Image (cartoon, rainbow, N blue to C red; front, side, top):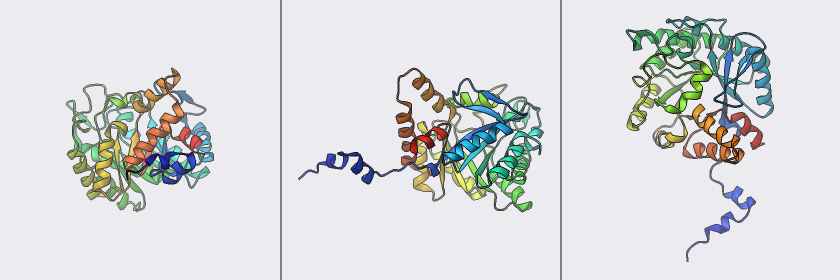
Amino acid sequence: MPHRYRRLRASAAIRGLVRETHLLADDLLQPFFVIDGKNKKEPIDAMPGVFRYSVDLLLKEIAACVRLGAKGGILFGVSRHKDNTGKYAYAANGPVPCAIKAIKKHFPQFFIVTDVCLCAYMGHGHCGIVEAQKINNDKTLPVLARMALCHAQAGADMVAPSDMMDFRVAAIRQALNKENFQDVGILSYAVKYASAYYGPFREAAHSAPGFGDRRSYQMDAANSREALKEALQDLDEGADMVMVKPALVYLDIVSLLRRKLNVPIVAYNVSGEYAMVKAAAQNGWIDERSLVLETLTSIKRAGADIIISYHAKAALEWLR
């Protein structure tokens, strides 16, 4: 006799008992944009509800997230010091190292991941050293390694290179080990697509490329087999976890990596995905709470162990 599957959907209690995928506070990381100065909280027009914070006000935001159950976050530096060498990316008095030290002083158990990339520190807005309007992969590696080491020295728990240079994970792992930071982990943006969904982030970080685009180093949106190659190479070089970015239109890639790899998979629910939801919610077209929780659950169901999302703080409150 055919089964009456609706019996297992008849009430909230039974739906909860048989639910296959559970979204937890432990799954979520909130991104934070950090700027120089004091008493600064700058709104980001394309990302309603998201701000750039000076370190003193960032601590208040971290405190609010911790009260909601946040276990960690990822830091992005937004620099007013830009040149063509990226030297401020590894300045000990830069916004990210200062934020790390302050957070660890006040919230020692808060797990800090830091973005390692040069785009916000370069006058041209690209993710590496530029020569004759081309990215020099190998000359970029020592700068990235130095940036990661600076974050580790400040107290970061994990560094996350997002530049998409070849061999950067190996360069960073070697630099960290040489200075006795073997316990600092590496979350590699192994599968970072050249995506139109990054637009609001580039406004937030003042990191739009001044010429051309990033298609020569970020992945082609049409490719999936390449994603597995990138992830496997980064793991061979010493990455502890790998990321898929963006999340929603690449859930097939999240699922592919989950089937092939036995390491934690991170999915980044990026700025464009966030902005679309906020715009629709502000127009009254959607129920924001229901849509966000459904979206985050879908990312978890696809195979992500950790989700980076600008919705994380709100989701933590809703999950309570």
